[in-house]
Length: 28
Image (cartoon, rainbow, N blue to C red; front, side, top):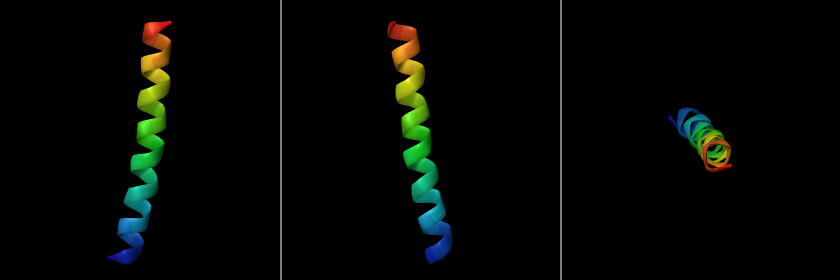
């Protein structure tokens, strides 16, 4: 469970970065 939580946390960070990048592209 700890490994899965760690991986999912990293995935969330990556997903948030992707979302921010997409938002920047749309706003630009």
